[in-house]
Picture 1 (spheres, rainbow, N blue to C red):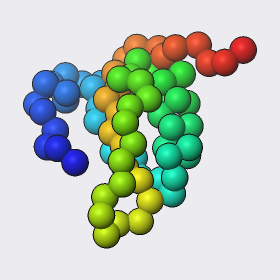
Picture 2 (picture 1 turned 90 degrees about the vertical axis):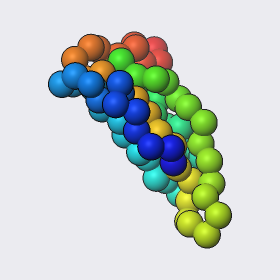
Picture 3 (picture 1 turned 180 degrees about the horizontal axis):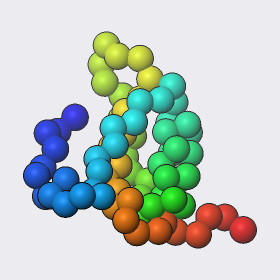
Length: 72
């Protein structure tokens, strides 16, 4: 993954979450749930890394702000 830019953690409450999961569906479900809790960058791209199991994704979040309403 790319290095974390200082702007993404420049204030208390800003976080960068690296997600590892078995498959794309699981990673997307985790990102979707986190988006319901906090203001996030949303469900982003999921990628495979050669020679490593599963998939990887990155999510940027502001835990000071509430997230999007979940499915009804």
